[in-house]
Image (cartoon, rainbow, N blue to C red; front, side, top):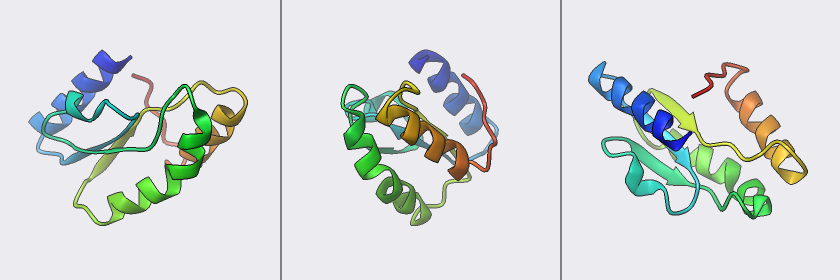
Length: 96
């Protein structure tokens, strides 16, 4: 899914849209041309839960027009993070 996410970001840039990417730790370099903010490790969903709102608030300080978010597996704590992402997106979900 990381490859498809990179394509969506590239397409947004080509269309003149300033994208942001909420990504997992260590993925920041995969999305050139986008503002990236990492929010934790997918194998440790508690790190994602702890950092999610801080990361989203950090995007408020940028000029991004759209945010693509890497979401954890929807189980356990990951399900709670997934639900928070869906609510933050206003239920506007694009599967990539």
